[in-house]
Image 1 (tube, rainbow, N blue to C red):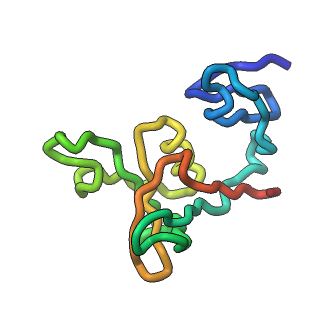
Image 2: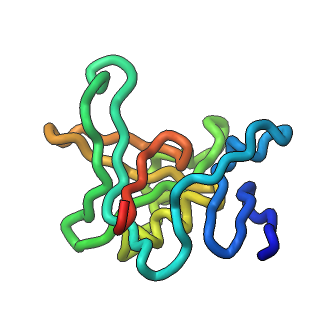
Length: 132
């Protein structure tokens, strides 16, 4: 069984290694995630860390049209920064959300129970998959 490096991950047929494990070759440890159709993404969550959001649970939820919302990363100097509507991308499933997050070019739009929104990168969210 060979291992391959792609998009910052080291992968064998049965394991995905976290991107942080690959940095400078330190402590390569597999996550318990298995690859395959039985590993469907069930939820994407994050806990707020600052200000009014501190300690609040944020969850990826579909919008009123049933789509999940991501934002393409842009610099603050850009004429259309990340949080502008023109940079929104809509997908149908949480699996597609994860696919976009893994590129490093997108942030997922999460919603708190009070309607507060948060944009988070892959390394700042918890992904729950079927079988976890």
